[in-house]
Image (tube, rainbow, N blue to C red; front, side, top):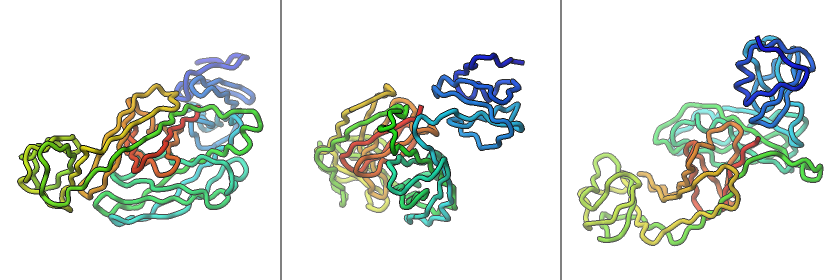
Length: 319
């Protein structure tokens, strides 16, 4: 059995402390290196662990919790709510009540995000998060899955930065800030006619066949080799001419060391977007927020964001 020393004991990450077999007492302190944060033992606490500010030690879960000694000058608020059932093509709008230290005012300088986006049903996306009242966030979720989906839970986190800069205590974080600039516009193929030598992407539905004009796979660019496909029906398939449409990415800040790529993608519903792919998983982490300055940045996976307009987007990780 490990023994706590008089000085603060070091652990590389929350998981290492969770798995440790120790018997802490009041005023014991540990330091978690991955969070750069110290935790005190709170005897009798049963607060839910988030592995950011509260850590539950498995062998002592009935006796207390490790709690962060400080939140680096910012206040963290969390909450969750059910979407209700969402028919295909519909949007769910609902509110989430947040709890935390004090009150998150409606006019606070706060960053909003969700922490369980990876658990959403396939092709069900977060559309917006808006702080509409004190401790209240309005959430909009859109169902583009092609089927009705049952109710599921959306978990929201808010970080209140109000007063942090003037207090002189910066909030510790990693940031990725990128400018996306699009030139030209993809042209939707509304009739079954392609131009030989032009570059296209397509999403082909059941029963359609574009292989004779050069199509290889969904969203893989191809150069048209013939004008008339074997079968192409709008509403079942979608194709775009992207010959004159490009995207460029300019990194303004990158604390993660990622490589970014971007490409146009479409689906059978003719939804065209720019998909930005990160070279390593970031978006799946519970302590990560993402968004765009003017429009929405939609998370598709732990390494992919979808954007619909030239915009500046960001990824932020609390550390």
